[in-house]
Amino acid sequence: MAACSSTSGIDSLGLDALKPSKEITSGIPRPETPVAAALAPGQIVTINDEVAALQDIGAPSVTPSALVGMKEASAVNATELVALARPGRPAAVGPAIAGPVQRHRFRDAKPMNFGKVSPKDYAVHGVDVSRWQGEIDWQKLKGQGANFVYIKATDGGDHLDPMFRQNWREADKAGLKRGAYHFFYWCRVASEQADWFIRNVPRVEGALPPVIDVEYNGQSSCKRRLSRARTLEKMQVFMDRLEAHYGQRPIIYTSPDFYEDNLKGQFKNYPFWLRSVAAHPTKRYPGREFLFWQYSGSGLSHGVSGKIDLNVFNGSERQWWQWVTGVTAMAEAD
Image 1: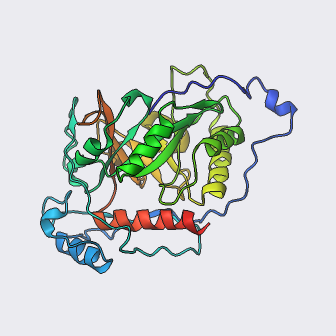
Image 2: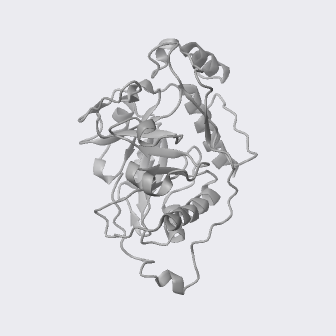
């Protein structure tokens, strides 16, 4: 993820205590149960199960060989992901949204041995990009296996990634599922950051849920490290505001050190996108369900000059379409 460069609007030095607080949650209903529940121990999702399920939802003709990410028809455990919709809003999978998943062809400048479960065992791969990828050939990137992309939009309360609008437009033209992310700046009022993101990221049909990127950044001009309670409070304000606007529960992206200090055991009713480039997320974040896994910051792909972040969706191809349908239908309904 990209570094933060916002510098104004500081709420530091205790000055925020002298004025009415802008950091008050907006009361978005949050379910008590976690967003994901594991399959029963030992339960298996087979290739034949996936074929039948895709045919049931009206997807194009699928053969077992087309289902990537499953090495053997009887040896792949999966995680059953729920739709992440607000309570009471059903999510049905329809034939209009399901389609073939692009097979993963990415390379890695610094390949890692992840052990028994590696990124290649996942069916749905994607990328995240910012200005640092420069001009992107989106069709080539899609052909390499990018089924989804998260695009850097904003950081702080006054910085817009200069490539955001172009990337947002071109990713959609290429047929990738797209979403936007915000690099959270600890020296800005959370509501101001949410308003800045909303101002710059359109609410459009079919977009993936917004992402809040929370991590430590030694290159930032903001050197603050807030208390755990204050960190969680600011995040909640930001996420409530985005959920109210986009009708989608935001996804939390984070790294191991920040997670350990601030997020362990927290936000169980939010989806997580976990960075773990040296080990499987279950090793770095024990007990935490996750929606996306960023497994490399040194990916190589046709269509991009230099390196690119690589990610996988934590589920099967069928579960991918179930999730996409649920979260995009939610936004449309609002």
